[in-house]
Image (cartoon, rainbow, N blue to C red; front, side, top):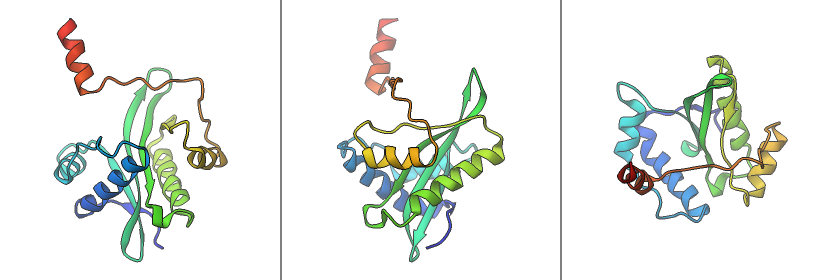
Length: 158
């Protein structure tokens, strides 16, 4: 097992497979709309929108962590961990810890004031993992989204 590394453009087909695996696990199998070319353009174009770390087992990517910068009006620059995914076949082998280590090290190097992410309230193994690493799972906060249709509906009302 290798240490995490920065993803390369040629890794994006496998990254998308892991994103789809996560969506299935989270009971949202049909929700993934992005394509490999979206990931390639958005992560490796002239203005990358995200940074992705990958972890390999026997030369196959079995885990990813995808992050991007955000800004807190209270703290300043923060880092958002969009997804930390380890394939079902490779869970329990330390990849999640290695990927989270890479994300926290990256955030520290950037001088961010916070690293934040969401976890589903029913995903007890993930919650236990994050808390074991010292993360504070904010159970009194609710995630608020406007999806694409919600944005259109909103715009039609103003």
